[in-house]
Length: 507
Image (cartoon, rainbow, N blue to C red; front, side, top):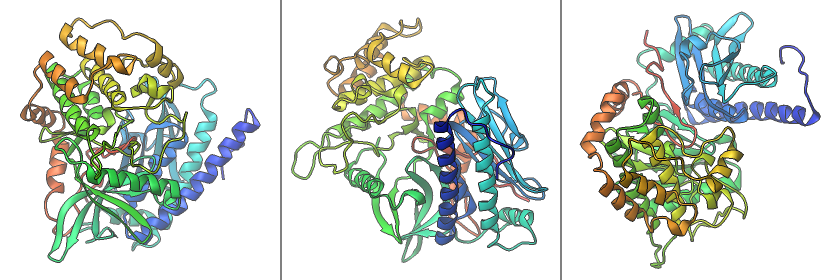
């Protein structure tokens, strides 16, 4: 039940609002059932719930924080909220943030029992105060209350808060559930179609290596088109083999859960690295990251099928989010989930645009046929951002951004960039595909000639310096489990969920 009446400006907005409510209720029920059925912990469910609810209100950041009798016990964070999450978990209502975004906060409570807080950050401000968005966030919070209590009802404890305290008890449960032959360790992050978990293989001699286990979201697993796209991604991934591409080990189905087992990349995405830098990277670092990414792209672009014919694979969704920079200095291109190949059965209908508007090529923005040169334009946009700290064609809204990509010239050359580097950017960001580089390898060669790329060891030192806590988390994650479960995480997919330094409190 919503607190107070809701006044809708139009019937259309009322219908959209009610559809959102129905989606939240159905999703919460399915996610709770999935966690219980597969033996997953509450944080796996919160991971999915937070990301999917954020998509309903077009939020790019947010958090859920649950509290026990002694303080926070479980916190999940989406993107970069720009606030102290543990403090904001006590807030209620709408707050304008200093960076021009709006934070909508709802307390998680049943009567006088306070379970924690929920917050979603939406770009821009709202003339009417954002009342409708706030009502939907409150409804999300109310549904989350019920789902959390439903989960806790099946655990031991004297009451709800004591049961939350049990989440931090040492030792934690020996198992967090299984999907096929994989034992789940901890959630990594969730996107629009799938969740990624850290898992261990189970063999005849016990536990094996850690992998990133990608699975279709429970409320989408019955959608044939989603399943087919997922399987297409798995088949393509199995054929890709290069040090700068994520290796896919296998895929399958276990009790209705489709999954892909992939290499676990220990690092953070370029988007988070740029955010930590609060501006452009050093030129050699930016060039080093992009050159490695181009090497991975080239391997995918020239991939051949079993008949020896080119697969004509195009990523179609390149951005700083899916360039992972490892603590070993190795860069990996992630997520060919919306890639289109000659042999792929699932295709995009003509005129339907997929991808992030800030990193689209002109031909992609117009819904035209794409080839590998579209990825080179996207990589040029990534390089521009890494070198300047700004996005080349960013405008106040997505439509204006797409028009700028198609029609506006590149901004003037910044004084700190050499003419040789600028020439690489101008070529990669040419409006006509035929005016760009002929291949990712050619672009990488020209880029390396313009500026010496940072080595793997130099990038590794940068990562250790920027993310020391994150590096320690991954070190702990790699240790064999003794009495409990290790902690850790990485950014994945289009809307990655990251852990703050404190996720589960210790007594």
